[in-house]
Image (cartoon, rainbow over all chains, first blue to last red; front, top):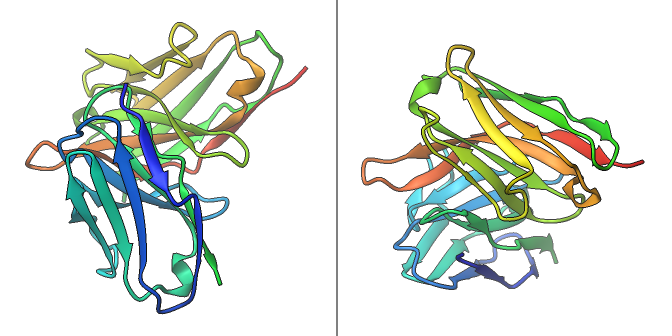
Length: 107
Length: 122
């Protein structure tokens, strides 16, 4: 089974900052890598799919990059509504797996 | 608009069973695979199960294999999760999600329900 390791587990940032979250897979996921945002008490929402494709309706300050086993989610110009928990997830093979999440908090 | 509405959660005693239901609307249900994802209180997301659009294939997380069964009724636009022999560690919010794909074949979960809470307690 593919294991997903996210880092950091949490970070503090200010409005306007650039934030980078990394995700490493235990084996290649061939870019079958997705990112989700979850706010407290809410269902997750898809941000990025296929490592770098922006989901419709998601602001362009979110971007994804990487390939193979190493991936990055970048939030440029952090906005108040971006304070949330972010998860990576591989859909390369079953069982699908999520990273443990990165909580982005206000500094 | 796409809507997924889960139901069937509640308090259940260890070792008992329950069935979760997810009613879908706003899209051609029979064209999409469907998934269940759960989240224990204060914890991260855990993928639980998926079923192909025609129910020809089903896959499970190791933690639920043999105890949970995913199924669907395309005539009712509904997906189910039968949860048997529940354990304390099954306590979680259970989300259903639509499994989508792009033209290149990449897979992702693009719509989620609001979730239904299952609490395992004696």
